[in-house]
Image (tube, rainbow, N blue to C red; front, side, top):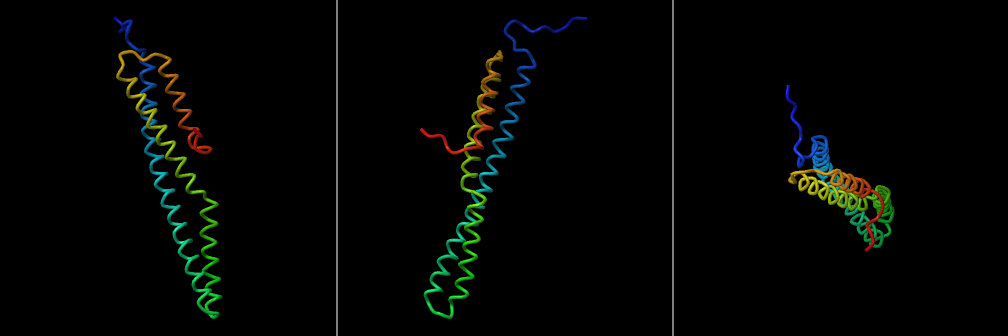
Length: 147
């Protein structure tokens, strides 16, 4: 019974399989980060725009007549509640974090695809992909890099 042995230039199968797994994970995570960024953009607009409109309406109504001050105060409270919800959820910073993560995952996916085009996958290639994966995971946290 003959066993297939790898030629000197061939990559070990486990390395290639791990690169394929990382590429697939990066593609899934990139799509997920894209959907999350879209969701948080909608939440940001959905809370921010009505808050701004209600604040303007309540200010105008409160100044228009003395009888409109109580309804204007109620509208102002609603606007403040929407603004507080937007501040609490930090939807804009979450949107930016997911955009950064989407870019980082796209870079991992591209790097893995290029690695798979090579005849031989080296352990160093896999190490670089894992470093890129770690950078993509960290992209969800913190502020934008300064520079």
